[in-house]
Image 1 (cartoon, one colour):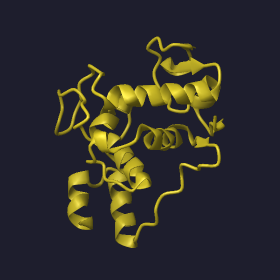
Image 2 (cartoon, rainbow, N blue to C red):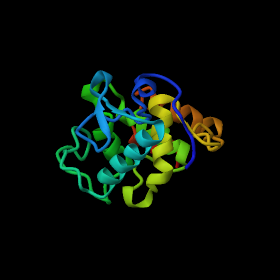
Image 3 (cartoon, rainbow, N blue to C red):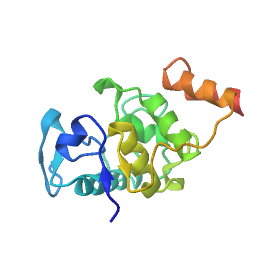
Length: 173
């Protein structure tokens, strides 16, 4: 098992690199801020993988709260952005469009990539890095592909909320 090194925030105290909310997960207790608290960082990372799989396979009954697919539930045909809108909702003061764009760029995909085309093993370290600066073993989640200056400018404008993913697509394709 690779070591899980949680970098910052509530994830450190809670051994919860994905900052997942406590909903009675096996092996978890209520931690600070309503987040799940795990015995070890590795247990917290496995819970993140489980949560991602649950969402990616359409088992979650939580509707997408906003955006173009608002009201629908997730399925393998849903996009990364749809999943992030549930994982890190606007109502919790998140920017799910920017979050999805950052994670997608680090994976070398776009935020409209279908969940069925994304590996949970690749996605989990990116979410953990975004949430808590977590690194997994020697695999540093912050090593994104090289972007050209146009791609970098567009990514920053989406991450800051200045542009939507749809607007960005027209600039980089």
